[in-house]
Amino acid sequence: MKCSKRCLIRLFSFGIFAIVLLLARNFKLMSDAQQSRLALENTYKSAIEQLADACQSVSETLEKQLCAASPDMQKQLSTKLYEQASAAKTALAQLPLERQELENTYKFLSQVGSYSLAVSKKLDNKTPVSDKDYDNISKLFDYSQKLADDMWELESAVRAGEIDLSQTGLPSEKTAAPSVTDGFADFEESFDDYPHLIYDGPFSDNIMEKTPKMTANEKPVTQKQALERCCIALNANPSDFEKITEVGGKMHGWRFTNADSTVSCEVTKGGGHVSYFLKWREIGEEKLTREEAEKTARKYLEYLGMLSMKTTYHEVQGGVMTVNFAYNDLDRCVYTDLVKVSVAMDSGEILGFDQRGYLVNHCKRTYPKTLFSKLRAQEKVSPKLKIESSQLAVIPTDNLDEKLCYEFRCKAKNGRNVLVYINAETGEEQQILLLVESQSGTLTV
Image: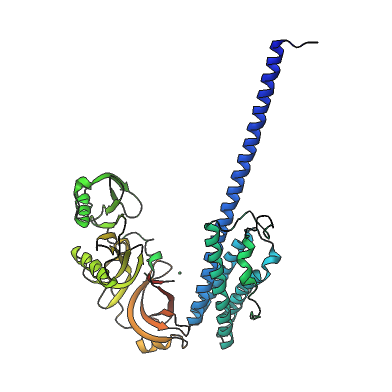
């Protein structure tokens, strides 16, 4: 039986159609598999970053415990330590690793959590932290530093593509690509003498969560008036700003942006305050010293009429120095009233200004007439710290309140600079900050 020409054409067409359908199906399956693989890799990358961050937090909290003197502060830190160790274990559990390959890492994080609960329980029973406890905390801190460093190296290697996240175990002989497990190898091998146990300036993270005090009851300005304030702050012309948008939230205002979006400035409706501005450009060779850049930043504040400001900390990144200023209220350093000025170190141009912390918190303050004795407050500082200087300071609390404290700048035995805050009314240990000092500047955690 012979097939007609028409029949052959139909068979050929059906064959082509079937092949196209098969190819389309295979392509979709490959595409779905690729998307699933990418989604899984992104999940692993996120988990590694969370793990590194949690391990860093554990290390910082352990170091703060070495500097804490009061039972209340020790209890606060123990509670925080348990939460951070739990967060690290949660992130670790999301990685494509066999638990037996990370026995020591799990053991360390579990014992940090267990030990923090044990210390907290002792404090609940009015039992003070003993010298042996401090020794154990010190050993835990040493290991935590090692783990945090290893985790950040692992996170950096994954981000740079040096580690293949698809390799969940040991690398194959064919690829010899390092696996995620390799990132834990050094830490896992460092447990020979493991003890068998039974954190832009300080406070900058939690000063922006309130309704701005300076703008709440001030007379509103028009858009034209706001643009004029913007131009004065930037020494610019109104015609430079082609994009104008309204800004909502707790600091209502307008955002003025130039044509190529390299300059942006926000001005509040209430009172017409420039809340912040940013200018972007390529930075050339540094010609200013840090002292000259700081002086330039202070002159800019004087140009704006902000005179009672005290330099606190600074940071240099990419040829730009950002100087943090706090309001100086009759020799009280008010950290909540924060202003930041960014200076280009090639020319001295002001590239950034941010007074949102100042607008949120600045007000006329009253202070208690009778204070806790400074000498007695000094005695509240851990004897493991050497006090080098002191001042009165206003700091924020976790519940968005403020406290007047004695700020003691201290030196720990390991050389770390530590800030200890003793409540100037009650004499309680209010806060401990670690100063992170490097070539780029000084920050706090």
